[in-house]
Every structure is written in structure tokens, then in C-alpha cells.
Amino acid sequence: MSTTKSATPDKATEEKSTGIDLATEISQIASSDPDEVKLDRVLMETDTMMTIDGHPYELVTNYHDGFDKEKLGERFSDILTKYDYVVGDWGYEQLRLKGFYSPTNRRARRDQLITTLEDYLFEYCNFGCAYFVLHQVNPPKQPTAPRRKRSRRPRKAQINERKVSVKPIKKGAKAEKSPRKRHFTIREKSKRKTGEN
Image (cartoon, rainbow, N blue to C red; front, side, top):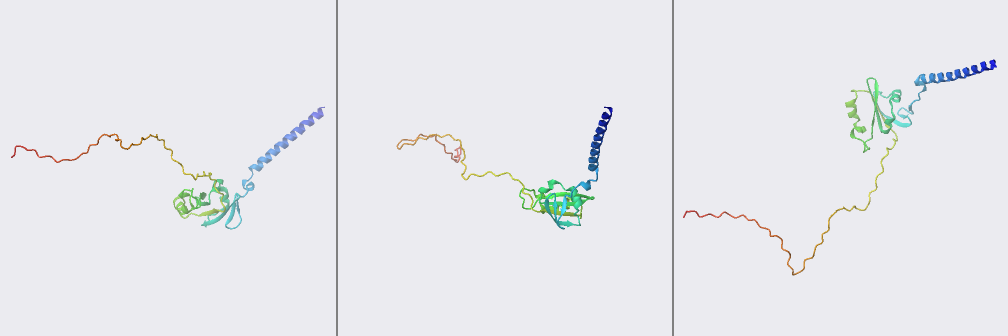
């Protein structure tokens, strides 16, 4: 019996060691180079057309070769998918991304429209910096709240007034006299006779 008991702990230690080996292998894979495991977020279809996280974009402007596929993939955020245009500018070797709406968007503020791109570049970017502009092809429509249907019937004003019964005036009967109004007239001062004459 002693031999069977000794065989059992060997299997248990063997199972434990394989379990530990699996855990170490998983941790080694997780700690390996993230560039190898990471999938490309930016897929170039042509020189100007690309797909970022499944959303198609067109490269409209590439000033001073500011477009960098790898840096764009690192810096791109899901919040930028709601914008019609994405502008990337370089400053101090860092890529900064900002979203803009198309001029037909009535809900956007004026400074969020792509027509103010030149103002943005002059105010917030380094002079002469490299930048690029991406236009989202077929952007998703923003959900809007349903509108209430207007009734075609005009609304009646609700006025709370007391109704007063009016007695008709009989012919031949004198109407009640109302208090008499006084008329005010300006008279000239009369000259007083004083002892002159």
C-alpha cells in the first residue's frame, strides 16, 4: 500500500506543475510584445481610402506629410467616430486629434464646424505644423428625439372670466343716472377793481 500512496502524490504534483506551467505560459504571452498581439486599427485600402475600426475614412488633406498610420492607430479614440471630419496635427512630436462636423449639421456649434479649420490651426496649432484631415464616408446618423406631432386644430385660449348678466334697457324708461362728471375749464382772472378810478 505504501507504493500506491507514493504514486498518488507524484501524479498530484505532476498535475500541479502542469497547471503552473499553463499559468506561466499565459502570463508570458500576456507580457510579450504588445505590437505583435495588437491588430491594426487602421487598414489602408488605397493611398487616400482607409478603414479605422470598421469605419471608412478618406484622407482629404495631408499637409507636410502629417499622416502617420501607426500613430493614428495608437491615438484614435471611439469618441471620434461621431464626427464627420477628424483633424490630426503634430506638436512637440505628439499627434493630437480633434473632431469636426460638416457645415450642414445644424446642431453643432460654430467652432465645431469644419469651416473653422483654418481658425483652429492658427489658434491652437504650432505655426506651419504638419497636419492631416480625414473625412468619414457615410457617417452614422445621430439619434434624435422623436418630435411631437402638432394638432391641426388651433388651441383655444383658456380665459377664466365671470359672466355678468346684463339687463336690457326698456324703451321709454329713464336710464339710471351716473354720477355727473365735472368739466374743468380755465377762466381768465378777472381784474379787480381797486381804488383806481
